[in-house]
Length: 331
Image (cartoon, rainbow, N blue to C red; front, top):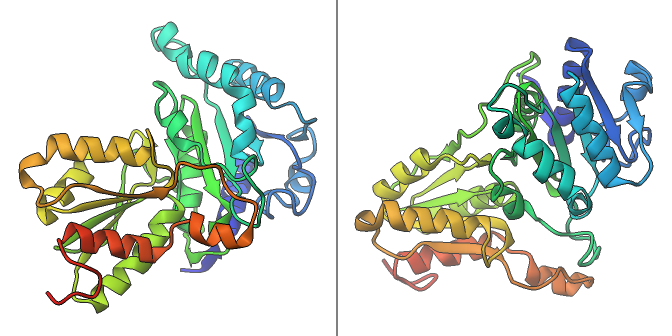
């Protein structure tokens, strides 16, 4: 199977979906720029025309509202928000309208809309351009939320989101764009709400979200060199999330770490940890550990960023805590 980068897989998913279904169109900021979307949308306007790849003014609320209307009229819009931070300006059409529509009309009408929003962290971009706000949207009934961590999932989850009859928030992380991996050439779908076991293990479970799923695999390699067998679960979807697979692993290992690229308080990790603690309490040998961002805005200093963003070493330390040992201590 050929290898693609994460960003190439996203590009291929857009291109194949647009070629297969004339109802699919793109709207958002920077779509005609070769670099603005990190190469993920490059030349799609040349291939499909600028009546299907609409480079919009900076008006997140209006553009998202237009896409909701287009979805209600039978189209399959993909709205591109180049920064997840500014999706906050579109909360009304997304949450009050799109997420509630199927419920309000007893399933007789739906909003087949994809909101693609990008986490742009690091690079000294600061507090207003580096936020991972996925937990806010995980809270909303009627809105599915996916966060792929591999090239294959980046393609398969986007294609699944486009075909879903209800609104899906698709969040990709620019720190993953250069990751490479095998990606099938054909159209395929990754089921929304189904996690993937990336590595089997018996001593501790690491549940990773988006970028932190990649960090979890690196941490598992370090732990293996220290004699600890870690199971790594890539959650892939936040709403719904795969409680069955996570709880099965928790009951097997008795120790769970949730690695979340967002803030700690009321975050995705908090929800997962609470569920594991409630549903697998008698099988746990230690409290559920959370590896998250600190509850502070993102810094604008490179030196401070090194401390702010958790690395695999933070997951390794959490695993040792769960095992009741100090890092490097004898078994």
